[in-house]
Every structure is written in C-alpha cells, then in structure tokens.
Length: 403
Image 1: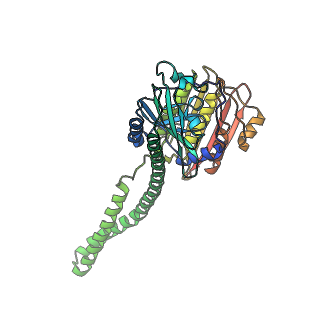
Image 2 (image 1 turned 135 degrees about the horizontal axis):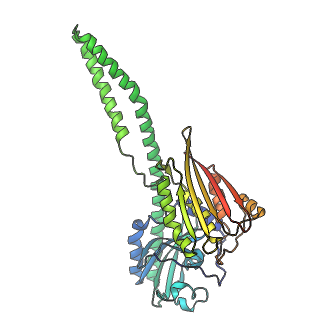
Image 3 (image 1 turned 45 degrees about the vertical axis):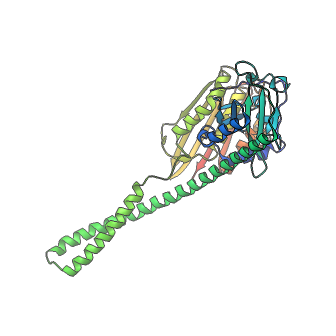
C-alpha cells in the first residue's frame, strides 16, 4: 500500500467550519477501508471521463486522508498535510493544478517526484446536504493538461453521486440497526414463550397417558388439537431462534475491532518507525456490539499518539469488554511514550478547546481531533480519563456503555 510521509514547508489550510465538518463526517461513521466495492465503478468512470491515470474518492478527518476507493493506484491513506485534497475541501467548486511541479505548495510532495512523477490534479469537494466538504473526488495524471467545462460538469455529477451513495449507505446502516433491534425482540419473545409452551406440551402428554385407558374420545380430540397448536407455536419459536440474523456487517467484536485498527493505523506507525500493537482482553472477545463512532474515537486517539511519538517509540492500544448485569461496557486504552502533556493541556482537552500543535516530525495537527473525541464520547454517555506527564507520554482511558 502506498503511504505518504508528511512535509511541513507551508501552513496547511483549515476550513472555517472545521468543527461542523468533522461532526458531519462522523455522522456517516465510515469504515474507511471497507467501501472500495461500493464506489469502484464511480472512481473508474471519473478516470475515464478525465482521461487520467488515477482517480480517488477521499474522506478527510482530523489527521488523515482516507482513500475509500481508488483507481490506477493502490493507496489507502496519507497524512492530511501531505494531501492535495486538503485544498479541494476549501473550495465551493473545484480545485485544479495544471502542473504540480510548478506549484510552491505542492511541488515537494513525494508523489510529484519519482517514482510516480504526478503532474496534473483536479478535485471536486464532496459536499453534504448540510453544506460541509467531507472529502473529495479527484483525478491525477503524469501529464499536464486542462479539463474542458463539459468534463468538469460530469465530474461534479459523479461527486454528487458519491455523496448520495454515502447518504444511502448511512440510511442502510440505520435500517440494519433497527432491524437488528427488531430481530432481538423476536428472539426475546421466542425465549419467553418457549418455556411455558414446553410445559403445556409436557402436561398434555401426561393427561394423554392417563386418559388413554378410559378412551374418552371427545376429550382426547381436544387434547390432540391443543397438542398440535402448541407444537406449531414451539416450532415457530424454534425457527425464530435458529434463523440467521439480518446482516451484522456493522457489528464489531473485540477481534474484529482489533484487526480493523491494525489495518487502519499500522501504516501510520510504520511511517514513523513506531512500535504499534493492539491487544484485547481475555474475556468476551466474540461478543458483538455496534461500531457506532468507535473508529472515529479510537482512530483520533491513535493518530494523536503517533503524531506525538518520536522514532522507535511505542503506541499501544488495549481493548476490553466487560459485561455486568446484562450491561456491556467497552474500555479503550491508548498509551504512548511521546511528548506528554501538562495539566493545563489535559484540562483544555477535557474542556474541548485544545489548540493545534506540531508533532515530533513537524506534522501539523488541525486542532479539533481530541475535542471531537471528547464530544463523541459524551454523546455516547461515555467517559475519558487522561494521565500524562511532560516528556513521559500519555495514557487515554475511554469507557463507553454499549446498548
């Protein structure tokens, strides 16, 4: 997978509505790496229309540009400050660069040089109905060019289609959640009726045996009718219990969660020569829970830890799921041995107003990752605790009750 390393020669742009933009992106709760099949035809079509070698659909969060679909290049992510699309989301129409090697903001990006030698870029912001640019549809080429007005309009239409598809996927996710809740109610109902009906069937068997000698045909007929009815209801309840759930693609267990985080953030850690490890507790590893906002919360914490860790440092994540009195509680622990925080910075994070600072390699933060984490945790009725000491690293402990 192609991965970019950050450069810091220029101040990178931040939209004025960045708080709302990140909140709007979080509402889609994207999985980032599992959307390729949903958009691959649109991405290929964009490249064909533009006559370009490469096309990408990108979503941009606090730290990272996630390429949720790609054509002509295998790239999943890059630091936000290394992306051209960070400029596209500042626009209301489109952003075009005819020759990247001649643009002072972009000419030192690694993909402008060998081996890719990219020269042309054209990007259209992905604008949601709320008016926020959460990402971009872009095309790139090794040759300089300029797109005609007709092609630009076609690419804008494809960008609109990408947003519509994201909205539809969000709606589908919501419908699945409602159906899963309905299925759970069915299962509970089946469990509730199974016991009494089994008892009735047992009693009927006893009555049948006692009445058989007297052969009271009229009573036996009624008993047989009751028996058939109860067995039919039992069969129905067994069917409900054994029926496969609707779709659980949006559900996590600790193992799935661990694998997802490793796939998303190991490339970022490797780019800074960091040791990155995700571990899970020994119990409840296969108990399902909804993934709602968990990737946004944990991902921002991990990206932040990577940002403030030096070469050959360590970033560790521990995931645990506790079940007590039928209540599930997820614990996410993210630790690093990086720069650390003073008490003032800790309180600013918890208050949601920490300002941006540069990482250990000059990576530019965008000032809102951690405040958004705090806000998302509060929206889930969760809690966050921060232990840190300047020069000795930071430990984030997140606790979230799960329905």
